[in-house]
Image 1 (tube, rainbow, N blue to C red):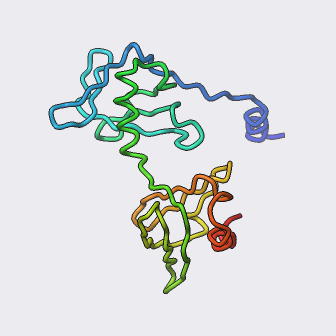
Image 2 (image 1 turned 45 degrees about the vertical axis):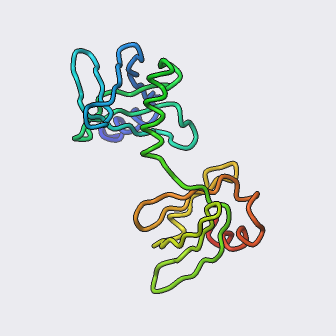
Image 3 (image 1 turned 90 degrees about the horizontal axis):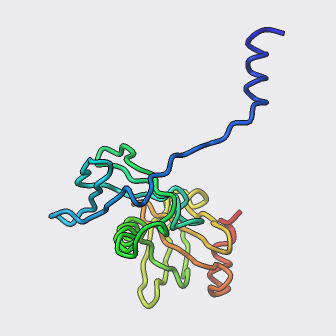
Length: 179
C-alpha cells in the first residue's frame, strides 16, 4: 500500500471534533453608537460597528451568534443570548430582529410561472403581496415542524409557520414544489 493511501485511510478513520471558543458574555459590552449602529467593547478593543448573524437561524434562534466587524471578520462567537443581562439581551435580540425580519404568510393565493420566473400572490395578514421567485424548488425551504421559508429574487424571506394550518387550497398550490 502506498504512503498516500495509508495517509488517506488514517485521516478518514480518525475522529475529529469541531471545537469553537465561545466568547463569554461577561467579556462583552454591546451598545448603540452615535449613528444608531450596534457596537461592541471586547478585550480592550472598541468595535464601533458590528453585525450579528445566526449560525442556526431557525432551529436555535437564541444560540450560536456570530459577531463580525464591518469587513465581515469574526470578532466573537456567542454561545447563548441567555448568558447576557436582560438589557444586553434585548439589544442583541432587537438587532437580530432587524436582520432576520420575515413577514408571516397566512395564505398563498396563486402561483403562476411566466418566462422562467414564478409569481406568487401571498396574503400577509390583511395585506396582499406578489413576489417573484426564480427557482421555486431551491427557494422554497422546509424547516421541519411544518415551517416553510420562501425567498424572493431580492433575497426577502417570507415564513409560513405551519403549512398544515393554512388553507387547504394554499397547501395544494405549494405541494408540487415541496419535497
